[in-house]
Image 1 (cartoon, one colour):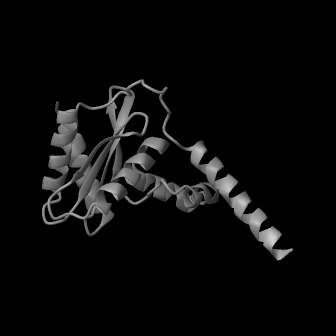
Image 2: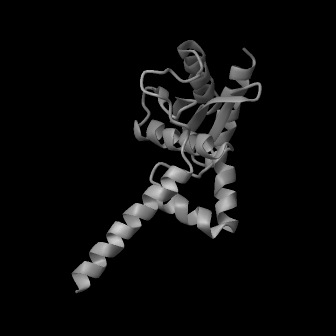
Length: 168
């Protein structure tokens, strides 16, 4: 009997995790349709700007398009690849909630339902360092930085990269 209850609990948690994830995910594009995004040159320049702004820290940078698909994973020499993956999760969080990833963390401290959704959705990272990229009023993607000793520094570096994007 205990095994059935455990199995039902696991299935129930899996279903609720899926519901939480679908409730906050970037819009999906039809197969074969390319989402609005930065050019690869602009993305690469932004990643280099972020790593320069974070000089002294081994950071990874991830840039995703408007549908949440990877545009660029940037892992500078000497940097562990997991930093770019963590940066992807920060960018995904910023895009899914249409706000900086650190703001999502602040909201989750006051909203237990949101905190539960974040806990069950494995693609979210609510530390600071993820920001959305906009052109006018349209969100065209997101950028994440990870690997500095404090996430507030990740966010500073992400904002420097965003500034370089907006200057184009």
